[in-house]
Image (cartoon, rainbow, N blue to C red; front, side, top):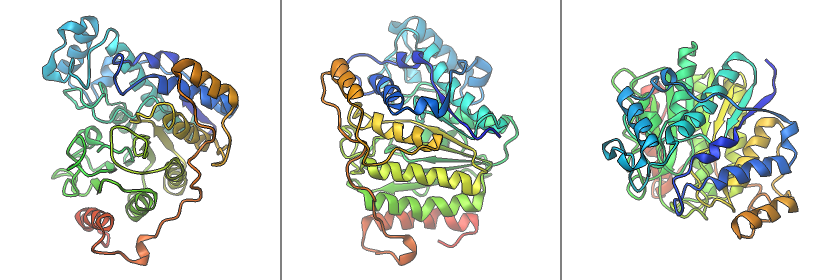
Length: 390
């Protein structure tokens, strides 16, 4: 194994653009890529542009009729078939939609192939993580589900155990649905409670299909959860399950929309805590998956203040050159941000909360605490199905 990390990047992914005013502004991708360069990380990773996912690859997850509907909407956006979730307020149709969506999917599939084959130990596609797309429909700003396609490709290549950890503020519903009845895939999602946030799924009782009971794990966090609670929940659930499952590859989704500045959700997590979970995922990959780690982006709608910093940390961690939490941001990047967006860029790489403290689950839990209730519900729903103590 080369040990070198790959950064999957093709400038054309910034064409994933639902139009003016849509929260999924592709400037977040361009600014992240520029910040990675500003910190000199290009020399620490192999930058690779993979091919777009072809139709046979897309069909590993998506129905043929849906792919045809995406292609038709891509050619004529005004005629998009809304029964497939296309041409809606969340997922407006745009020219070239199929091509750029397939390109993003291709980067995640390429990342999975590189890690499985040993061309790289870690691979990052921060343009990916589009976890809401379903086999037969678009949903939640997601056209093709690159995370599911990457996992499906790993299975096709011979993987017998793949773990997927999703820390986006929204439930990873599309990935859960794709592998609902497949015991080879363990999906774990930490997200804001479905009572208060799209897509209104991800209840702890959702634990997998009849052939894969205990393969879906959902930690539904109360609105307002901050750093200490978020990290407590992560460490109370994820490491024990990963240690038990022993995946051959760890796939993680790092939506930055858990942040307290994000306009579309209600958690109160800092960049410092996001970075801490990125570090933890890296460590879990080395402890239990022979270092094989595919890391994806996801949501994140504070497109200047939060997303570029969070995902640049992710690239640095994967590259083996972590950026210090107290690091100041290069002035050239800050000037570029102002030139492109007329917004003032942040000055340092986190929110000044490092190191983030949290109480371990082993120290005991409070049955009256809403966060602890959420953790307890997830553990009680799944751990016994996997032969673990709840």
